Image 1 (cartoon, rainbow, N blue to C red):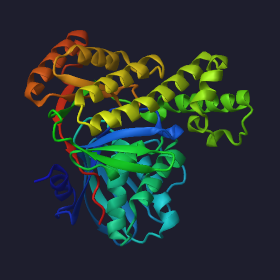
Image 2 (image 1 turned 60 degrees about the horizontal axis):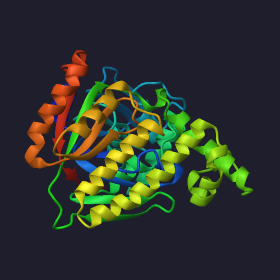
Image 3 (image 1 turned 180 degrees about the vertical axis):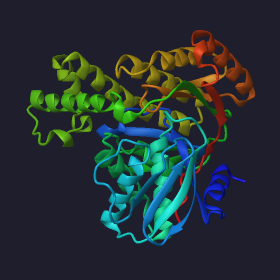
Image 4 (image 1 turned 180 degrees about the horizontal axis):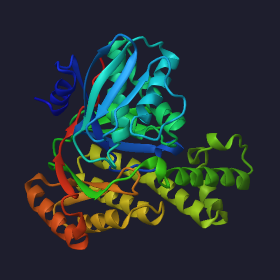
Length: 392
């Protein structure tokens, strides 16, 4: 029996009516780009968030996560308008955002479980999407993929207070097994690039550092503001028209303008812009490499993306940087980088399946040699690509 179904039955003394699932995602190339309307690549993986649930006709929302002790409860018509700084804030925000578009009547009782540790795989987006799919099913609401992404992002931006873009939600909605998602966040056009027949086989390795983190409590929002500041300044230097700060993006600035004026920027702003423009180029080259079946070049660009994240975006805890360095020296790893914001959490890698066991042993040995106190908290997971969330 599924873990969440068993937990639901133990709590409510009956079987759940439904079980919903949303996969986690990885972004091999295109990190720290979506909030400035850049381009991204992504895979959904065959691990994710499960929710066992049933209806509550009185409109009450009652949720329990197997990762957190506190049970959350509110009403669909009186959701707290200010966050309570716990795990369920994402779902309160999603309730408000959905209710703003489609009046809700039914609530739900649910148990939620994530298959992998928290940090770096967009678990917050996966939880929101799973919750929304369940709430919509019970209230007979049919969302388009675009609406699902909009509502999920709004919950994080406006309620939780994380200035994320649409990378996480888009990967978890649009991705398909054995395809690379290649997406332009400016116009939200995307392509699913299939595996080339000549491509070498690969699997997706997830290396959890053993250190978890919360985006809202990290320097994530500061990095986004530094990008916007760079864009605002570049427009001013170039004599371009500019409006509201929060609506300014580096995608507004042609690369020639950036190159002409980058040396006038404060160092932090320049580094963020350097990463964004170089990452934009890497995504385009990476998509073409994947299209022609060159997984080794695609992996090399992912490693290059990780290097830029460390030195230009300036993220990475000592644990993640060590993992990244070990991955670069381990035979059989095509490429990889931090997964997620890069402050704590995990690294992802594209690996040769024939060497997966040896790779896991090598990375584990070298990492725990450097951080022995993380024994028991560090973990390795070998995954495959997967379809995005299923919409009824």
